[in-house]
Length: 207
Image (cartoon, rainbow, N blue to C red; front, side):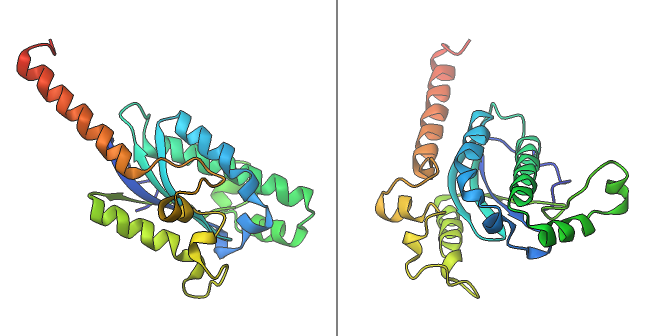
């Protein structure tokens, strides 16, 4: 679902994806793995709980939980996407990746160019799909975590050893470069909160 679709649901999980322009390996070239932990912290501070991720050379998958206090998936993730794009361009300039920067300049649409946009880092939309239930969440995580060893990719022999992924966290209990919250604990806390709210309404203490 594209970014111009408004994702209004809160207190729910989303599977989201950023894809680089023309599937170029921008995240790898710009060494965004070093930027990722701080970027994730910023999302967390704005009401998105990060429950899973995998950063590939040309795309990023996230499993997110949107809290009740979040201003909205579109706004927070849209801002995050823009900030990451700035970082990619800045790093490519430092690395003097002129050919790559030229491709990003060519990708800017005319209506965006007149507004001052100079580089098209990501596809114009990000994908976001609501995920409900443990079984479906586990399917999403399994798909994400196997990305580095699926299809054309052969980034590692053991997907749990891929350093830019939450696979090691879920499969081996290892803490990686990004702070992850186990989706099961989020569900447990949400269920406990719902139960407490029902109890308060039942005994009249919620007034």
